Image (cartoon, rainbow, N blue to C red; front, side, top):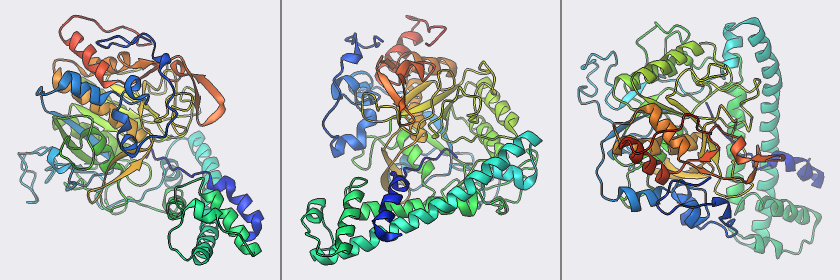
Length: 549
């Protein structure tokens, strides 16, 4: 699964803590000749901007959003489009969420909870989608499963063994370091609370203390450093606990060669003919299984209802397909999930997942071809490893080139992630990139969206950039349903904003390059421009370029 975890550089400061004694021209109505003239935003984003930045406009707001608000205000207005079904092939989602329950796809031919396949599509009780994971949740990474089950050729298994020998001890060590740092910060926090006589304190309160003991001096120093990673110490402690949980799950499940997370499902996940399996409840199993809910909100959270946040697209129905566990997804589930979405009316499938080993990749490739034959667009996240996908060592499945030099389909768009800071740091540090294997970039860092139990939270990843683009694609297909999946993909690529500025990739200042060299289009997705170009293509006033770069 394409997950990113913000370590807040705690591991880089751990040693210091222990030393302290603790052990181009856009298609717009009024053309903008040079977006590089846009000033860099110096002021901090307001709370409202932080929650909505992906919808803002680069020219007006100096924030690299997708001009979604502008598209609604100046183009869509009160127009009524066609309803578009978008499948979220993910971890399942909160079907009762206050901002999502009004936009769920419903299979009207299926009678809920009667244990029968009423519509004869091969899936029982699939009212809002399907759950290919059954009661399973935690999973190994694919390369660990390959070692456990002796799957793949000898060279792949040798590569997997080297990787596991490296990553498993790192996970254990990182967990231990986070636990140690947590105890140091927690102890210092309690000492300072007692000294100040208050439960909550600011950095200014902390710096007002005149330490009378070496222990207090050390505590003030530790907490001062922690304030660089969060606005409050409770926030920092929460982040540390998240880190402990993340690395514990890696050690106990993702990288544990003896763990079998598939057992509750009861099928052979490496036999695609072993069906049926799973069940008709594509809801998240636990609160922490939040990924699919967050993704769905970005696409289609009910707009203008006065609660939560607004999705990119209106006139959308979300089909929930639970196929991505807390670990690497199975090729079988992804292949069958894509086919389910296609056969049940989805015209866009959001795929915010990925992995570096795929022993049955051909099943997924055939499913992508099937989607192409049925005019279904697939939007895929580029991945969160900060890697150049043009390097053969950096594999990311699924893809649309079968690890070759050319695309075998033209219905799949791969999305990298932007941050809210226009300028050298606007490429999210975690985002993969590549001048052929990543098509476009879109907002993906610190995105505010829906969470289970009708909550909302900021999350970041190319997993958040992909649904932003899926939302734009849904707008195009809603208002211009005569356009094909391939046309929609190329409209999104060709209508984006281009900039000549130099950007840092992978958060590494030594890896500076120009923005046009890190994706095939060299552009940032722009909903406003995309709708203008879609209208012109739909009416035959323009034709799409044969080369989008």
